[in-house]
Length: 345
Image (cartoon, rainbow, N blue to C red; front, side, top):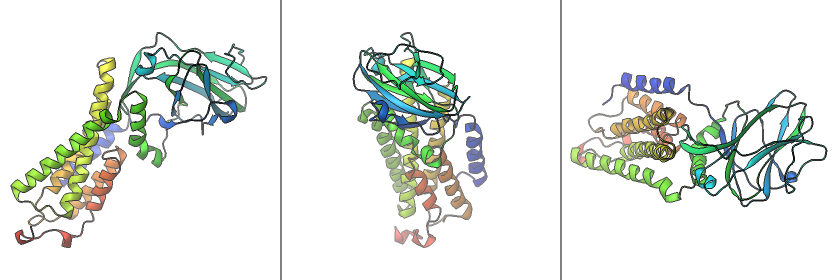
């Protein structure tokens, strides 16, 4: 069994290693914003957001509304997955508002507030595919623009393509902050972003499902071989650990999927770190579950280790919330519910 000190040192090291990287866009999906009067309002537009959407066809636009203070930066980046770019999807982005000092011509189907200036940034046909290590992904950065708001007021963003439809993402802002809810739900939102990239539901889920059953099956086989009782504590810790191992498999698969399109990049080391952490946590808690509770009941240190594993697991999305919650519950598992001797097995 890992010593309590080694576990604490390992978890602390994970936290320290991850500090430079735990920042990225808050992902959100939008819809129904195909008119200026139905524009999606971007709350706190200086915060870093990644808004995912799909233009069903060419000749239509989506709209976003930003409330800005004078001097605040309107920072935009338009991305699109390989599957859409290969179809000829090349969206453009326009900033609409007073005092921009530009009056670019827009297609007739793009709504424009009366007397507003228009700053148009066309999609770059020479854009290359890039790798995103945070929640591993690969996409093209089609357009990018930064401009300071000339005055307090409302600014609209229009995203459109004159010819074909496709999937796109609009990154807004630079201030990287998350609410607890946003952070914890990133793995679930990421499932939709993988679909947005063009992956099937089966290909997204398969690595996790396989890894979960392999981990659970190994724990069950080992327990039978060692005559370790499979009581409630065993079940909670093994399910928790298997979910965390499954998370690692998902991240490694997504990293491999992205790198298959762009080739190796050093940023992939960040993805590997985000995979190693849940893998390490999962193996630690499975090992705790495989201890024979009849001879080695949970000590206070082991219970504290379970709490730490659960807390770090929540921070690093290990086990899709359920895994860390089970680890935390395991820390409070009553001793009287554990099997004490072989006659109980």
